Amino acid sequence: MRPTPPKDIAVWVFDLDNTLYPAASSLFPQIDRRMRAFIADRLDLDLDSAFRLQKDYYRTYGTTLRGLMENHGTDPGDFLAYVHDIDHGVLAPWPALDAALSGLPGRKLIHTNGSGEHAARVLERLGIARHFEAIFDIVAAAYVPKPQPEPYRRMVERYGIAPRTAAMVEDLQRNLAPAALMGMTTVWVRQDDHPDTPDVASDLSHVHHITDDLPSWLAQASRKQK
Image (spheres, rainbow, N blue to C red):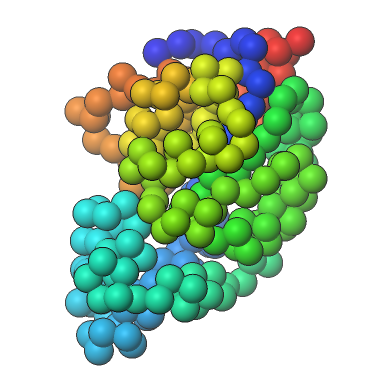
């Protein structure tokens, strides 16, 4: 694992949820509850059964949506509109992250398993939308989620990214594995209160950098790029 930020990064690819805002925020739990309610309503299940199915599909397919599409023919647009109908107002602008991104040389993109509309609203609430040239969302990925390799290939082809000059920043360390295989530098935003923290035995060989303070880490990276 590399102890200091990398040099010569031309493209920065950021995950969105629980990466560009803290996992302790009350935003993603809203999405989680909306998923459970959607499954309960569409599949005529009680909430506990819906929750178990939701998490089973998430673990098996990478996203709950993919499991619903594969097993129940769920319309992805219907699902995404429902689960992202939340109060984004719980997020506040994050001046420290804004400043860090302002000083960070290179192109910046979002790669999310969520929808582009949701991502745009999050970026606006955080006050950082102007830093990003594009949002590569689950629709652009043909509904194939991270960590499947296909969406990473689609993304680098669409935006002309040379993987060995790119860095990917994620809250889920498993989503960094395909990026590392392509040659990207990987950055894991580790949070002790994250709902999906890996256990101590997890293989982290594909993780090049770990931080629990993204703005500070990016500020250090900015100095390395100059």
